[in-house]
Amino acid sequence: MNSKRYERICEMLARRQPDLTVCMEQVHKPHNVSAVIRTADAVGVHEVHAVWPEQPDAYHGLRRRGQQQLGAG
Image (cartoon, rainbow, N blue to C red; front, top):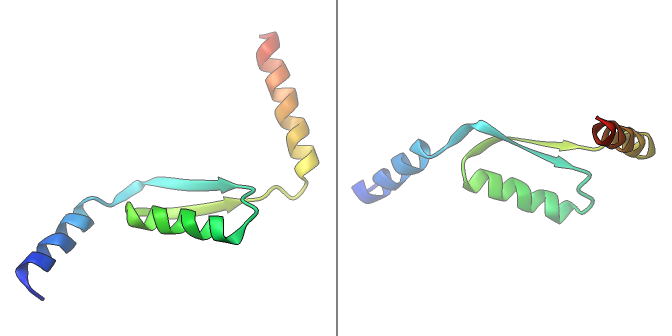
């Protein structure tokens, strides 16, 4: 390995972002999931999570109720 390549590797390792986590919610298409993972990897993100609520209708109902409570306050 030449010194220039070694420098690039060291720079890349120094720019990692271990304190950042990516969370995807209801991403439907596998190629989009792959794109998010590749992008996270490219910028040094160590954790990627995919979230899919088991009962989407119940989830959206909770969100609406939460928004109504915020509007009332």
